[in-house]
Image 1 (spheres, rainbow, N blue to C red):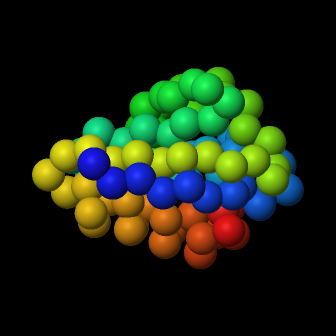
Image 2 (cartoon, rainbow, N blue to C red):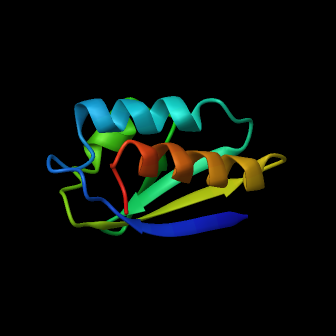
Amino acid sequence: MKSINVTVVDPVGLHARPATIAVNAASKFKSEVNVAYGGREVNMKSIMGVMSLGIPTKSEITITCNGEDEEEAVAAIEEVLRAQKIIA
């Protein structure tokens, strides 16, 4: 299992457009991908799950990947989210 702790810097938090980018990035991998915030953890491949967390800007989240391509998954998801200025 691989995980990273990052801070959401998108001005609207992890809602709608940034959540869609996150879900699309996670959905490309076979590994189980979860995001945790505020004591809750959801499947990062589920737009409704990610949006249900209501993650505001300047929040710390944990992204966890577990499976055969977990190394590639966590690196690629982090890269996409940083490139889109969703996380720092």
